[in-house]
Amino acid sequence: MRTFTKLRSFLAMESSLKEEVGDLKTSTNQLFKIVFERLDNLEEQITQSFLQIEKK
Image 1 (cartoon, rainbow, N blue to C red):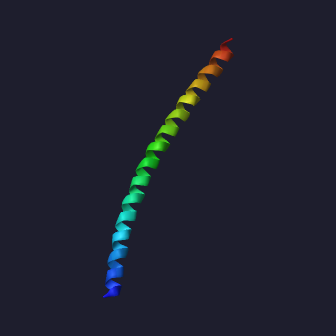
Image 2: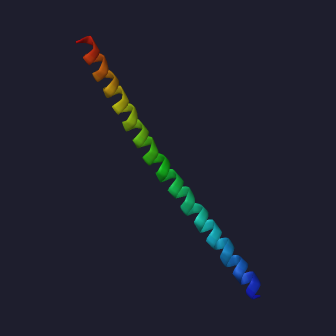
Image 3: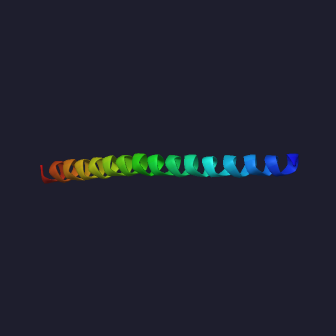
């Protein structure tokens, strides 16, 4: 009986951990999306600055 109770608790813990990992993955993906968008913007700004310097 104790074994089955322990197994049930492990299954419950696994499903809650699975949900937490999924939430963490979603939030991490959102953060990386923001970081890469900002890096792209910086790259464009730097490229434009270099082009303006070369024209002078």
